[in-house]
Length: 96
Image (cartoon, rainbow, N blue to C red; front, side):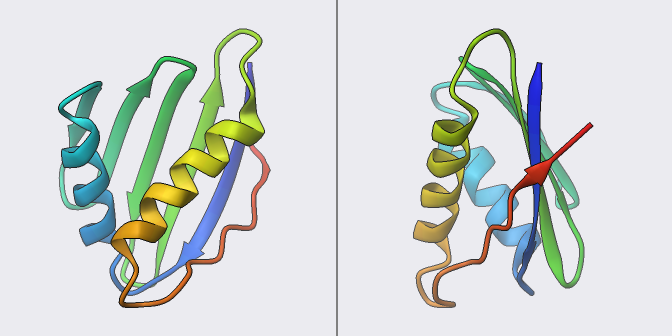
């Protein structure tokens, strides 16, 4: 399993987490509250944790999926919700 994590600076972390979970809830298994969320995508789960200053996003690939593609899909969706704030910064790092 490969995994990556990004700590995305934003004061709207909880709002973006909830928006993404609600958006994907029509297609995928999701669970969330204002502080954390989990979306089970076909390639693997995306887990998020919100604080007052950042959104922590972890992508996990199960099998031979494309981690770079998964990161891009997650970042693109979150940036759509953050359009008023400007582009969010994702500095993806390997995760345990």
